[in-house]
Length: 184
Picture (cartoon, rainbow, N blue to C red):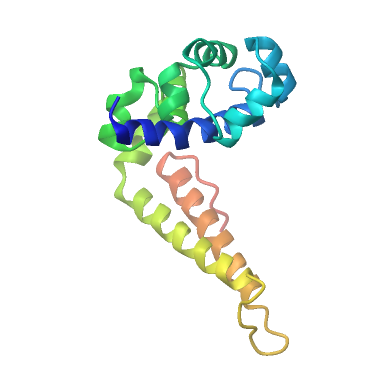
């Protein structure tokens, strides 16, 4: 392992562990430090140190943590399993996104819709626009944001604009699939 890889693992592992503790990938439930400590054969204080990035577990504890959560050691250390590494490097998708796409393969209709969306340039424009509109709205809702004229709810307008934009995109996509909901 290179020095950079070791540094990355030291910062990635605690973040991944915190995510897994918050929501177990298989049960969706929160795991306490005590539960994980008992399951892997170490003290909850040690789990706390791992979670905070103050120390790293031994290799055998790392393997037990991975087994407890049903993930690979690669995933614990890098956030990407070795199985999905090539996809992550090529497309930049997270482990969760890759996993969801693999799950979608079981549902041909869903996979077809995903394929159509990802093949449509309008989808990427939509994502960029929503991101921009959401950033603007967030800035307007910040406590230190300048206030508009009395009686004018600028943030409310931007929220309405975002909602209408999303609704219109969904309406257009449904119409493309002959599931139109146009009301004339």
